[in-house]
Length: 515
Picture 1 (cartoon, rainbow, N blue to C red):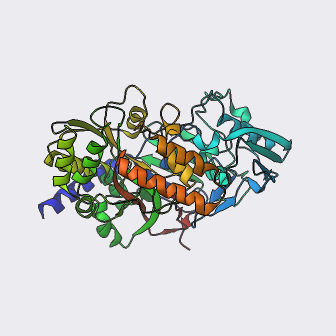
Picture 2: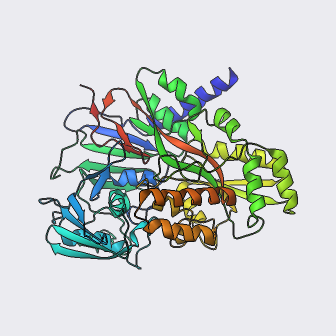
């Protein structure tokens, strides 16, 4: 009873805070507004430089890609109408939609498409999630509505990356305006159904419907993203009717929220793997036995039940089961005695770890990290847990020299849902500063298999290579393998038209009041 009263008190206090800031709930009519609550700050407004799915979701309101994914994960055209391969499989010809204009009134055409794709292979532009695009050798303007993407080598599933927000189309004429440079776009100008009106750093991002949009017009004239790091505060805003939809509400409250007649819960699978990343190029984590010990030391099933409230699924591979090429790789069942034995064999019985975690980025992220730390302490490891806001956290763990942690909780959901993109977090090509694989794990056997698999045209052979890679990575344990996360949305039951993509994106642009 005391716990229940404490929760209610916290929620009530948070509700007062929302009320004090003014009501911004969804309205109906010509000036209708929808408000979406998210738990992280925007680390970048530049699609090439951002590095997480939630940020992509925000950018998708005003930026568009050549293609996108449907609920089944199938690729569909957007600013492209079709594409076809050359006979040698090294040139992808993309036919572009005619009659589309950027928000600044300039035309979307082949020159604009080339400009946006060229940025992804330019040494001047940082692209943390851009490894998949480095295979592009050049982008050629064939005619005003056709481009040819010339690849360095055959990549059969290359079109999938055209559906990633990283490759969103940006108006070339926007460079030099509003603080934009070629190297860093601060206020991107796109072709999407909304235009960016205002960004208050760490607080909110406001969009307004673009009346000149080429496609179907959305219902809401205004969409506001509210940045609220605390999940309980997001829940309070939803319950009070001041936020219309939130991501990842507190897992402990899902049953309670589902019982509310004015709230709808949508829980769908995603391709996000959650894990503790380990700095394998420094002691004590350069020893595989230590890394394996950490995996055996943590009772993931107990955490999933008692901390995650069964809203995630235990993992058995470095790949989520929705990723192409997935296979079951192994098992690290809870075995603290084996963990102690491995630590003893490695001469690492008195080691210390500093574990970092974001707060509000993933389901129960801080709480899960605290539970993981508790299990590690039980096998004799000294653990210190640190946290910060998302933008500061992700900058720190992607640093080459100034990462303050030797282990950190992270998640990875490749937008293209393909093995190559998954491997950017598990291979050398993803090492900072060019990527986001801060483990610095380097196994020549894995690298050789990966180089072979990337070029293999036969799907069966390719998947066999990826399966061997997963089993080797499982044994090498550059991560503490945890679980795959579902996408959980909670929203106002008076709204419909809310959907999802299986790459952990929500689809809300065409949401509208129930008729």
